[in-house]
Length: 190
Image (cartoon, rainbow, N blue to C red; front, side, top):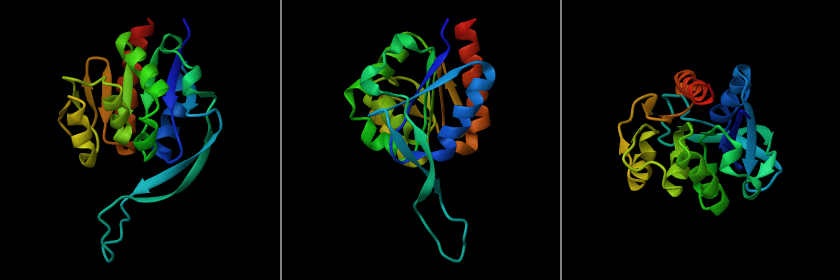
């Protein structure tokens, strides 16, 4: 059985949300297939609220991160090629969620009963693909409304597992998110 993981990205994909699973999943024998609107090099970004109490900052600040090559365009992917999907956050989900081929692939993976992990703003993609109705999810609080608009129940907190869906707030939850996602993948591929 092919052990490919679908990882959609775009410009402004969050660096730590993406690179941790990108390197961690192959350690358990999974091949991460990075997909984008086009097969090209993408810019990642670092998101954090600056930790300077002398200058309050209410929003996440964005700085340039590393670059990541998309192996394939969304239009050239089929859900049947993958054993699961890992959807990272950052600002990229805000615009790639409108890509019909991305939504089709995510819906095919979800509809086939395969595990999906999703962090941070990635929930916007699951909402667009109509894959989270009735599911308990976590994401960052400012995306709670996006989750609820997709029919999910926002419970917040760290890593949340509901069936074959693993969701979390973002990179601070990477360890728990990957542990649960890999557990589900190993059960699916056994």
